[in-house]
Image 1 (cartoon, rainbow, N blue to C red):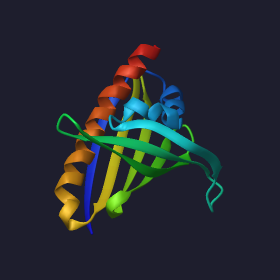
Image 2: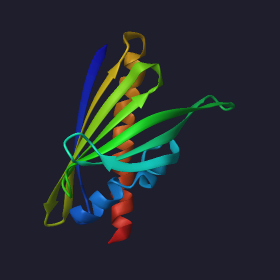
Image 3: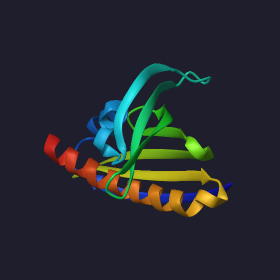
Image 4: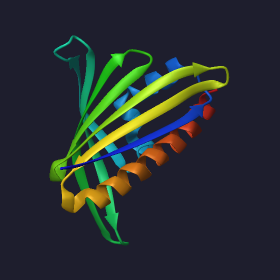
Length: 153
């Protein structure tokens, strides 16, 4: 299995607590992640270490050309490792694709610095497609989160 890692840092115009609340709400990912069109089966719980987790199913919609669409269900677990500051999202996708996104928030004078590190694991035949898609989605999420947080202020 191939592993690719991407990191991106950007600043949003909102306090860290507002950004964090947005990112731990599964419903926020509809549109935040451009492929996610629905979330369901949201469950709250704790991991073996007693940390709060949020589990849910997200539906991603893919398109190929004008008429071909397909939905893919992914299982997501958000772990609140440092509440208010750090969260980790573990994603299991079809095709034996797994990813982990770690988001760190740092309060700054003009808002919050957001650093997202993504590690994606995929089978060799899917590697190029998965890596390109993961990086593109990461940058799109940054743009959309920036837009959403500017509206909150």
